[in-house]
Image (cartoon, rainbow, N blue to C red; front, side, top):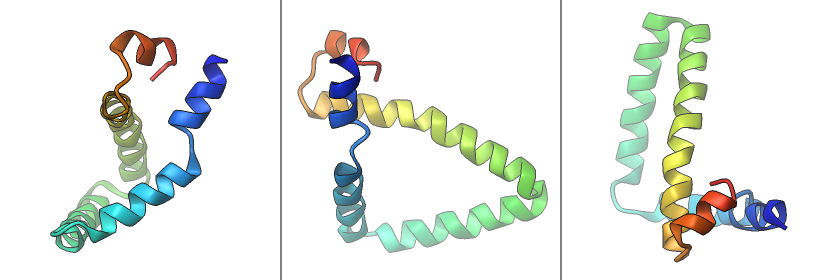
Length: 87
């Protein structure tokens, strides 16, 4: 049951797609995206592709916890339930 709820709430491709569509319509997103891509390329060229990829993957894993926590709170889930579901 825990795995099913986690699958429905956090590992849902439809939610990901909807969030992506919304994000692209937010004011300032294109500029923020371009600034990120420019800086990421600078860092990649200095650090090298292997180290940059390691950093990026680690950073995404780390920030995923924050995103999941905000998502759980946005759904109105209590902290205890979110922890039990493995957020």
